[in-house]
Image (cartoon, rainbow, N blue to C red; front, side, top):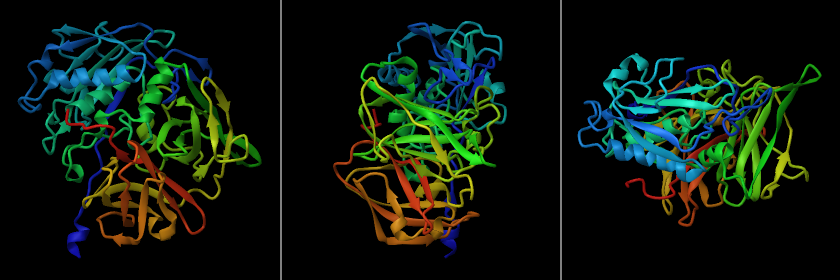
Length: 459
């Protein structure tokens, strides 16, 4: 069985770092303009946003595969976000090659692939970085994007390269004001895989998820016809209420099981899910101890500046709404206020950390297709103690074959299990969660770990 032990554990490389050039007001993923002290901008107030394409995009360096459509990938990345919310971009050209020095903006919103940005990355393996500048009121006044000249890129899915459009779409999310998401299938999740992971092209982050849409719309609209859910996440310690910093609260559509929005709680326990279409939802809360960790969320500054782990850590739960039901109805143009208490004692013991398929483990979402059956893996502490009936997916369009649940051997410090999942032909596109329930009733979620594409990413 040595060949099984040697199967690979491929942790997706950190996709990008958002460099906060001047320490901005605090932020939250889907409510970027709110912090502990009130409302701040934390977004562009000017429209259109003037984006300068560096001449390096027309003459890219050798780390970008010859013939790659750099300018086309850049334009598509901007278009994804412009179509998601009320955002307008205007394309300009600049001879500038490097992003502005930290704390010294030059007034040019530059996108560059020049090798002259090598010093910005140093030894980092992140494919891209975005540097954002703010005014005294917290509004974005400049943002620069650079690709890592020490990493390989392509636009044709060449194995071992990063996909240009996926990287640029992620970085553009930072440019408009978004931080990282804890939804694994979101474009704004903190890690990007290389082409060849799972023996497949790595193109899913070209397509914005429901969570990405919610984040963009929370900043820029449109706001008509949508609702929101907000409140505090708390626990009880030493006989008193204590707020939870760095807890993940996400919403699933009841009918389909799709993850539609997520939020990371601020130090005061606040979460906010905005941009929600009218519908019926289920809210789940959990600690950041899985494929996306608390340290992945924290940028160089802002509201998550000192976030290293969910504090205090708590066990996953499904929230109960105003009618004492797990079904929470959101109406158009309506805001719901819901506070939740979570159990911090005992701390979580069921901690799925990686997912996988095709003999590889990673932290990247699993791109599955309708009408097919797949063998998928889950690795993490406690997963081998979950009974077969405790493994499920959030969608009624996906079913686990209990007879196929089995242990696997990987070179990991934690156990790994596998099982077969059948995807219905009529499954709606979107991101879906894997759910685990231990024999003692403890819950754990891999939020948005399964992605069903909205359309072909070959364009």
